[in-house]
Image (cartoon, rainbow, N blue to C red):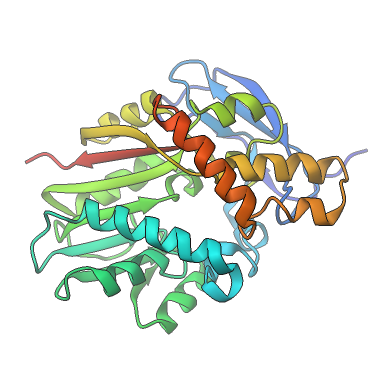
Amino acid sequence: MFVRDIKLTFVKCCICESSNATIIGNGQDFEYHTSRETFSVMRCNSCGLIYLNPRPVISEFKRIYPPSYHAYNFSENNFGFPYKVRSRIERWRLLHDCSDLPDNAKIMDIGCGDGFHLELLRSSGKKNWSLEGVDIDQHAIEAASVKGLKVHMGPVEKIDLPEEGYDLIFMLMTIEHVERPDETLRGIKRLLKRGGRLVIVTDNTSSLDFKFFKHHYWGGYHFPRHWNLFNRHSLRRLAEKTGFEVVSLKTIISPVNWVYSIHNALVDRGKPQWLVDSFTLKSTFSLAFFTVLDFIFQKFGRGALLKGIFRKPL
């Protein structure tokens, strides 16, 4: 008799609350090997949301996010040249999103990890901007605090923070990790000033990498840590459900899901470690190649990541 090695729970679609869904793929934790479980991916037949079901219970959080998790120590020492390149790209994107903010703006990064994005804003943004982060993992909070960043621990919808106190809130590669994205967005809406903006970046389930690898190996599944995955339609539905105005929805370039899709296939097929290591966040050549490839797809609106900008109504 098969015995599960991780506690799981069954869930409904977080957008339309429907249980009417179809299995479209499955896979394992090919990256951190935190479980031997094979996880199933569902597509909601009502709104198109892609979600993990069943998924780990909250009490398994520390297990599925081990201390070696990359977001807890994304540094030049650990990632070398790819860190430098990503820093340049992310700095440009952040400053573009903040370009119209006043000198005394309050900015929050939800799912801040080790404070990578907050550090970029602190070094390159306006000196009087107030920068804060939120994360639910102790390792992340400790890593960000050591850098002198102001961070809060806990789900944003439950932390005691000033209502209507923030001009701009980021969720960068975070919404796919949260238990109830609808409740999280309602919590964010409470914190934003009227007319304030929320910027979400997440994996795109209408990308070509998803189409090619969706049955088993797609890097965006990040088994079992990505629980809810979106395309333009489902992310718009989530924004409208939680009372946000949609300012823009577009795709942006990223090589990561291409690289990790191949990585996952190689791991599952028992290929040599040197070959597996050629497709990771440290692999300069593969990251560069798929950046160029995704740049081409982006021209047709099929970039690997989805970026939504939402506004709290006036």
